[in-house]
Length: 206
Length: 206
DNA sequence: ACCTGAACACCGTTCAAGT
DNA sequence: ACCTGAACACCGTTCAAGT
Image (cartoon, rainbow over all chains, first blue to last red; front, side, top):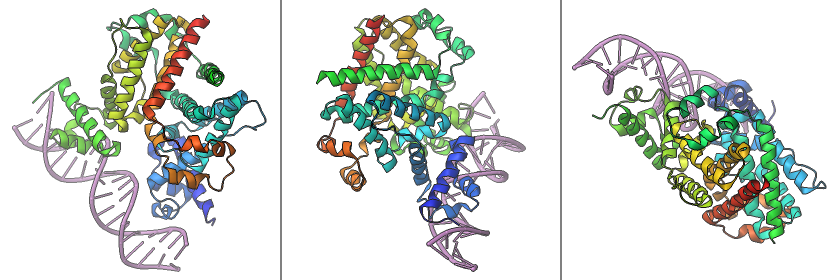
C-alpha cells in the first residue's frame, strides 16, 4: 500500500484515465475509487472534495507540459511551450475546459508562467508589460488548445442547412474558402507565427 | 399559457437567471422547472435533454451580443463586438465555459461570425485567410472573456506563499510589477490594440 | 399536446462502525 | 490512520396516467 502524496497521485492518475476514456461526466467519485480498487469514501483522506479532485486534475495536466532548456532562443522556447500545451490538450481534451475555469495559482501553473516570463524578458518585452503579455500568450494558446472541438464540429451538411435561408453576404463570398478543409495543426502554427510577430512588435516599441 | 418557441425562451431565460444568481451547478432540471412554475418533466417537450438546455443557454448568451452597423469603420466594429462579448461575459460569467465547450454552429453564433467576416474583409484580409483570422479573433476575445476569474484569483497572500521556497528568477525580477494591481478592462483594451495591429499586418502582407 | 407523480438508477457527502 | 457500508438528500430521465 503506497501512502502520503503517492496515494493522491494514484487517485489523480485514475481520474485522468477515466476522463480520457469516457469524458469528464464519467469522472465520479465512485468510478475513480473503483479504478483505484477502493470505495468512494476512501478517497476523502487524499482529496478534500470532488472540486479538489478536479483542481488536482488540472495540476496533473499542467505537470505534463515539457518546459524547454532556457539556453535556447526565446522564440523556440515559446513555440515549444505552446506546442506542448496543444499536445497535452490532444491527449486530454476532456480536461481542457477545467484549465480555463480553475484559478492558475498552483505550483504546476507557476512553473509554466515562469518559463513564459523568462522567454518574454529575453525577447525584450519591457518589465511593465511582461505580465500582461504572458496573459495574452496563455489565453491565446489555451484558447486554441480548447477550441479543437468547437471548430471541428462544423460538418458540411449542418453548415449548408444553417446558411440556406439566411442573408449572409460574407459567408456567401467566402463559400469556396470555407468549404476547403483546414488543418488545425497548420492553423495553430500560422497563429503562432502571428503571435511571435506581435511580441517582437511590442518589444521593439520600448 | 404561451406556447410554441415562446415557451422554450421562457425556459432558457429561467435557466440563465439561475446560472447568474447561483452558478452553473444550480441549473438543474428541477430548479429551472420550479422557476417556470412547472414540474421537471414538463420541460422535456421544449428541451430535448439537459445538454440541449445548456446548448440553448449558449445561444441565449450569443443572442445578447449587439452587432454594430456595417456602415462604421471596421476597427470600430471589431472593437464593439469584442466589448459586447466582454460585457456579456461580465453579466453571465457562469455560462462562459459552455461557450468554449459547445460547437459554434447555431444561428446565433453564425450571426456573430458573419459580422466578424465582414469586418475582416473590409480590413483587407485576403479571402483565403479570413476564416483562420476569424477563429484567431474569436479565440482571443473568448479567451479574455472567460479568463476573468482565472486571473482575478491571485490574492497577495496565496501568491507569496507559492513563490516563497521556489527558484523563480523571472518572478523575482518582476516582483514590483506583479504586485501592482491591473485593470482587466484596461488590459483588454491594450490586447485589443495589439490585435488590431496584427490584423493590419496580415492585411498589408497580401 | 402538455403536464403530473411515482419510480429508477444514479450522484456527492456524512457518519458510525470496523481494523 | 485508513477503509467500509449504510444512509441522506439530491440528480437526469422514463413511464404510465391524467386533462
